[in-house]
Image (cartoon, rainbow, N blue to C red):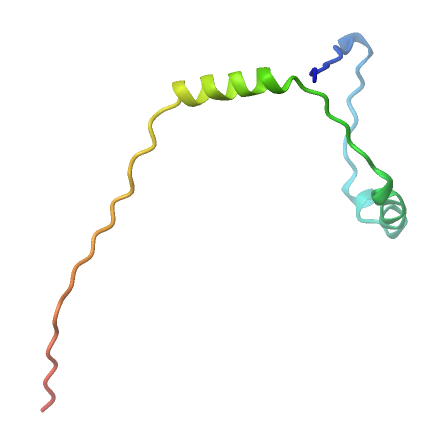
Length: 81
């Protein structure tokens, strides 16, 4: 498997502001409900390279401290007058 990344030309990029009122509109919700089950995602990656990179990152990461649990037993006598 191979991870493919396409580089985009920054000169052709356009900034688009998200309009929350459009996302909340009943029309958009109806459209989203209609197409959401048709959406598919496809990822191609090099499994061997992923494993090697994960092993390397685990080796160089900081140690995870051992959790400490303290238990204290007590006895309490309550006398009423």
